[in-house]
Structure formats: C-alpha cells, structure tokens
Image (cartoon, rainbow, N blue to C red; front, top):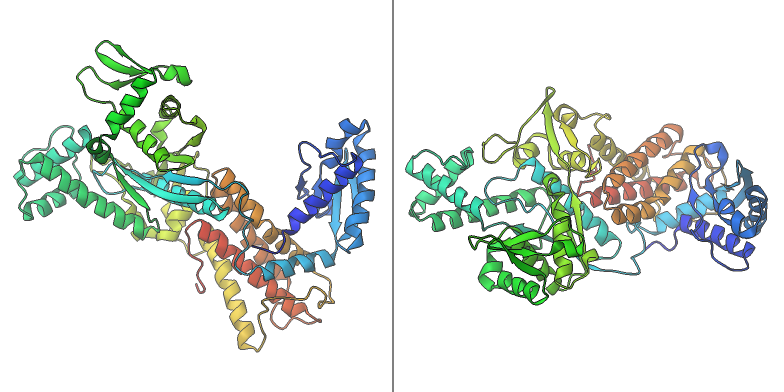
Length: 548
C-alpha cells in the first residue's frame, strides 16, 4: 500500500480544523474536498464552513475565516500551504505549495505499482455471477458486455480488499434444452427444423460432430447433453480469450439431481410461505415486498424457472458468501424483487442479494445496427467481434459507459489507430511514456524509483501539478468505482490521466531537462503516470502496451 494518501491527508486536516471549531465534535456529513471548477480558485476546495454554520450559529463566510486560521496553522507549519482563500458563500479554497506537490510525487513513486486504495475495513466474501448465457449457442456480444462488466466489477471489488469469486450458472435444464436437442437431431437426420428450434449454422456443425461420435440422433437426452458440453467448451474458450476466467461453472441440472430444489421447497413450506391455488403451488413473495405472489410449481407439476433459482441462491449462501451479486440482462428488471423476496423467505438477509441490470449493446457498421438472436441464427458472436477489433477495444467499448446505458460499438471508430479512438488514446499514452523512459536510459539517465522532495530547485509547471493531482485521485477513483459498481469511471479516469500526461509532455522537456533535480522529478512523474495508467487499464482487463 502507498505510505500515505496525500489527498486523504488534506481532507483529514480539514476535518481536524472543523472539529477544532466544535470542541472536538465531528461534522456530519463529513466535509468534502474537491477540485474547484477553475484553477484560479485553488487546488482544492471544501464546503466545511457551510456545514458548520448551522451548528455554530454563525454565517458561513465568518466560519470560513476561522477555518482559514486553523488550516494556516496546521498545513502552513509543514510548508504544504501557499495560502487559503475564502470564496463565494463560504468555500475554503486551498492553494498548495510546490513543496506539497514534490512530497506527493515522492509518495507516488515510492508506492511502486501499488497505487490503489487501502483495503476496506469490512471485507466480504462475494460471488459475482455473470454471463450465464443459455448453453444453446455461441456467446454473442450481449453476453460479452456482461462478461466485460462482471469481470471488471470483480477486479474492482478485489482491489479494495474483498474476497471475490466469478461464477457462471449453466442453464442446462428446461424446455430450451429440449428444443436445442431437437434442433441438433433434425440437422443430423436432414429433417426440417422444429418451429421453435435453433437455426444457426453452428447447430449443423454440432450435428456433424455428434453424428461423428456415433450418438443416436433419436436419443434426445444424449444429443442434448453432448450439445451442451460442446457449447460450454466453446463459451469457456471464448471467455478465456476475452480474459475472463470463471472460478466456478455451476450446473442447474446438478441442483435437481442432488435434491437441492426439493430441499429449498421444503424449507419454504416449513416457513409457511407457500400455498396451493388453482392446482399450483405459490410463494407469498408479497409478504416480502414483491408486487404479486409467484408460482413455484405449475398445476402440471413442473417447476417454474424461479424454483431452481431459489435453490441456487440458497446454495450460494450455504457456501458462505456474504454477498450475492448477479449481473443480469436488460429483460430481468421484474425478476429482482421476486428473487430478493424469495431469499428473505428462506430466512436470509435480502440485502445480501444485489442485481446489476445490463442495458443493451449494439454493433454499428455503416450506420446500421446488427441484430442478435440465437434462434434465428442471425447474430454477431463475441469471437467475431474480437477477430475484428481485438480484445482491448471490445472490452473498452463495452465498459466506457454505465452498464445501465445502451452502448453502440461503432466498428469504424474501434478499428482506428488514432487519438479519437479512446482506447488507443489511453494505451498510446502508456506506450509513449515507456518510450520516454527507454530514451532516458539510452542517454545515460537513471529512472528514479524514489526521489528526495528537496532535491529540485526549479518551480513546478502548472501541467506538472495537474498531472500529479490527477494521479493522486486514483485510490479514491478505485474506491468509488467499486462502491458504485461503475468501471466506466475508470475509463473516464484513465482518459483524463492520458490527457493530463499529453499536456505535461507538450509543455515540459523531460529527458535532458535543465535545473537541479528537474529531469529526475519529471522522469519520476512519467513513471508514476505509466504505473497508474497500467493499473487503471488492468482493472478493466485491458493491456498496457510498451510499444505501439
């Protein structure tokens, strides 16, 4: 972990100053410390005076003046502060000294590759279930978006200290598997496909493989089982190529075979949460906040899809997970309340369940959107998209917008090797820094792994300060992105780091820079920026190339 978090230290100084005005009592909510909208308003700005005005019975500007005195005493004493100004209705604006920036840079460099946040004080054991596409066809780009997102969420949660596992739920039971088997069988026998069957070319390929293995096409159980095995192998290979390695592949069929579905149903019965109505067995989910009760067992004796799902989530809890996170498709909005209610009916904490609903993703080429449907056979597979634009571009364009926002992947943009392609722009910044560091070594300069803040005599350029300030935001960005399940924030952050680096390199000579300690501090800044970009891209599952 970094030896200190420079921004957290500043925020702590503001909180200490606020406590001093209240005889040691904390301020609720805690004061913020943000970048002001304009550079001439300081390096950081706090709303502490506005929060304190009520409890102190004074106007905010008067409180801000008192805070200024406290901060000048604490931060001014170690040379961190240039000045404090009171602005507007009572904002306290901090103008930091070069000495503060030099110390902050020294901290960044000393941290090495470990630039992320301190581990959470309350670590949880978490399972993130994602992708979980029906094993009836190749993984299409919709499943790919869930894969990129779920994997990034796991990386973020792990980065803040949680114990996280990736899980794929194999829907290998139900009517869609029967339809799948009938479709393969028809292909093998050269018969017309069933009306509700699967029509893609991949079904014919499966038929050829299964026929070559000598499996009787009329044995639908054997055909379906082998078809599922082959499709899961294909999905596993696609996800591995995509940089997603599942810890567990969990079979729905195994729940039935082990008796877990019956056991979960017995537990619901014993709790008095089920009842018979019109020949069906219902669950009183309205007792737990659902808008209507749900059928568990139909009048024909067949379970609804909800029943094995309840058993599956009970199994997760029995495996000791504190939090169950499901990444679900856009058509699952109505599903969340009934599953949360079911978990509560089992006697578990409904807040342990968390659903993240994905919006749609579209492939756009020449202004036209491609359609995706396994049954029609007209879809864009994730493998095809990776073949076209590469893993890094696919992951970026699936992650750079909120998961709740529909994404259009413009293939023309994603193929470009130019700065208007955002993933290229960020990766190029990393490669450019690597080139600068190689040049420094070639010309006889050492790239410092540590620096003495007092060695540099020349003042820092504004673009140097801007880049240092941006790099210092990384721990908080990781924390916020993890808490909000929002990897798109890391995309935005890494783009901002790249932009700040390009501005710095445009303004400042690095290799061969004149002035005592200037070259060393700028090389150190380049190294810290390179590490930060690599760390951010790593959280997205995207590579950080040394050369481009």
